[in-house]
Length: 282
Ligand code: G3H
Ligand code: ZN
Image 1: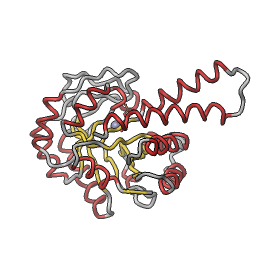
Image 2: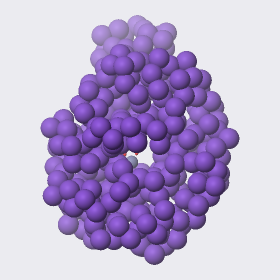
Image 3: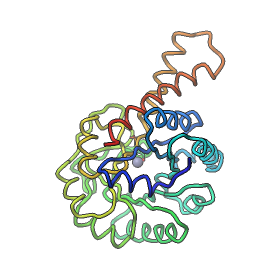
Image 4: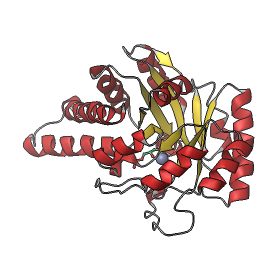
């Protein structure tokens, strides 16, 4: 059934585990995420990013309605989350489209502007019943950008700044920059666990890891033990889907029915979802 992100993340944090949140682009992604979660009997978050909305000709509702429908019929709890929102127009569509939460992304802005924009978004979100995640310190690799240099200013979340930011912005969860980067196609990211500990010790909101596709299993497990309660995964699904379809088409050069190759793509994503949930659920 449909659940709320706040409930799922809160329950995971209470038992020192994490809930996995997967970015979906097509209906096959949605179905695979729910099937993968059902296979291991775990709750899951379906998230649609502003980028994915752009891909869908700028329209949120077609995929959001499909996701809500699949979530309602699921055998496990499934929450809908609107991810990496920069546009206020999109933010304001979240409630009617069935989302219980949003990640408002002003991490590209200087601190004061990030804070002001995020506080306004959080105020609006709370007045409308949303759980609001924000980001401080930038997790690189967004929109095809190169990963941020680990030593570049802003490439890590500062614990002192994070305390002030969370209390001044009034957000419900914080995405932290601790060494992961978006859109990695190798699982080679090394996380700064000392920094994570300092962040977790100083904050009383759940912490979110972005760019988790590039993080090896052992690092993910340690990060969850260290206080990460929501693990965002996107690219890993696309790697699995694309590899399976590529292999299918190479071995079936005469195939034309799209269901044939989408089936193997969806199955590959389903396996990835089950595996990653097993790593992070704690
Ligand atoms: O918000 C989405 C995640 O941070 C996905 O990152 O595609 O690198 O796994 P990823
Ligand atoms: Zn992200």
